[in-house]
Image 1: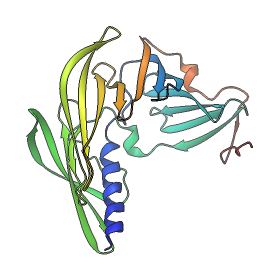
Image 2: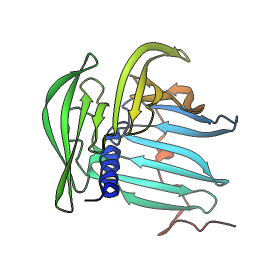
Image 3: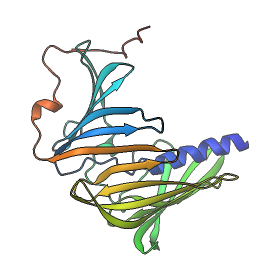
Length: 253
């Protein structure tokens, strides 16, 4: 097997690991503004609404408003295009319909060609974690990675891939953001022949997601003006007068 092929499979495995972090929709209903800031001062905004097993994200792509609705109660995902009064619909994979992330739930569920085997429970940075072995067969060769999932939070605390790529997540303290108690986590990612990269995220235990993330180079992504409370059902439905579209709308020149 070529080195390039090995790296491709390692990337696939590591992507599968990270898919377990944030796949759930929090049980607490709320709304919030989404804000992304770049090092050049450029700001992009959006809106998030989280209901009972449902999430709505409003964003702007190439000057056009796009709305993504994930509905675990009906097992579907919707893309709304308000300027065209159209929508696209697809079924959610079975693994994305599950309730809260669990360290004991198979992290490979719904991933084609990837198998997971629970190895046991270990301590990672002072936190109890379930160790999982992930394997994929390509060109007759089996490549294996290992990940550890936090028992309390259901987050991947650590992983190692066959190409030497690795990640470790550790809680470095507790803080308050906009009056909300959050946990500050440091993520260190490493790859062969490269300097380790550190990112930070502030995890809200009540909302079960990160409300702020800081990336190398000065990029920041956060949720502002969080309002906890029930969300209207109409936010997660197909609006009246919308027609189903079978393919994405063409890019306007």
